[in-house]
Image 1: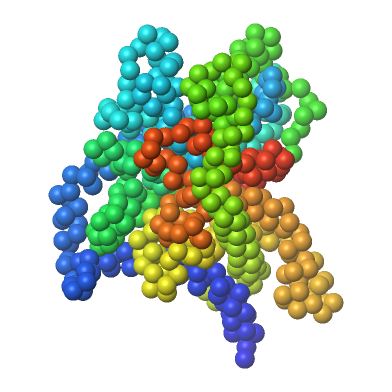
Image 2 (image 1 turned 60 degrees about the vertical axis):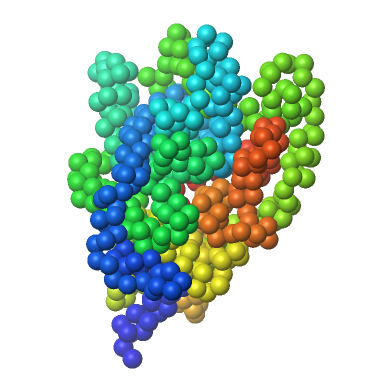
Length: 292
Length: 288
């Protein structure tokens, strides 16, 4: 046997365990979702049969699907810019020699360590009407009582705020690392030129942070479609689907109504959105980002 | 991933001309500390409610008596010992498999030249974008077919091949000097021995960083364990915690806070002890 053939067998043998698992739990279910989305849901006496685009037509006519999409878009628009901007601000702050820097850094990072499902309980208390913490603060300033999680107007804001709180400290770490990697000589040179602190940030630091921003942005977009743990505790998608996000809807359809085919069609939409993110990352943003 | 920053040693000897001084420093410190207080508020509140009697849950008086009763009641309200054991088994199992599978695959991708390597790498990286959470319906079916639902391996299986781990280890293995590899081979070491004696020891910092990220991710994971478990014997902490928020006899915030602290305690203690390593590891690791 030739060397080349031996090397190929060796290589694939080393890859085999990992590839088998990936194929079984990533590649195959992705393809199966696509196939199932064109089938009917198998029931006790009625096996699955090909139904063409029925599931997708059902989706187009499904007001809850559109509600979940709209919610998810608002959730993304709310969390992504806010958590990235806060992360950058936090990183700039804890990069300077401020008072209590280590403690402040740890405080920002604690939400990352805490299980979302656990802290969602505490946030649930903050948002509780009448005696919750937020209510007590509002009442102290003479404001009127609001049912933050029980009202259609405020529930989505409330879950968005929790997501921002959860993410900002995590993204801060990446910005902090990038800030510390900028050579000090750049700051010295800018200072000699007489650039202000703001000019130095805007013209030197911020452009150099672009690869980090891109990386954080991709993560933020993916997280906007998968962060739903707090929905389970805080609202369960309510009131009246005001906080139903796409993944939560997939969970409801798949495991609440056991309509697996429709859930597969919804999964395909989610995968398509993620593929779009990947495409934007590799095809477009990457070329517009200047690396150090 | 391509944009991931790498931590580099900081030159602290030279003064930073843009370091804030005087009033600017005071303002910046105040802002930073205020934000930190908001950020730590949920945890601070959890501690307050957990160590005081229930009637002080919403009344913040400094003279409130201290108690550990809430922890005792939380511990009695759910089989926490079992949940801790399940979570411990779960994260250990996942990490062990991730490291073994990841090491083998990364070694092949980093140092073996063979037919189909690039295709394999692309297939692995696909998992970075297709998150396992999106595939809950099909993965549930797969595990139901092989009768694994409601077991700890069922929670672990979809995660034991981690594209991120393979990617991270591949990058690390690529930085190992080829001469070390050659020298070991000249001495008669087999490929597996080279991997274990040369590559694995040199990649220790990567293993530690990845281990921290993996453990904290799977300790906190909720959706998938919620779906595939339905008995005390397999349920991890996060799913067990859920019973507190869905109780019908009114919500006991003091007990919830005590349970929350107990659930997160191992990670919080670990974080306090390994703060630097934690932060460093998260710098290297964005996606789990």
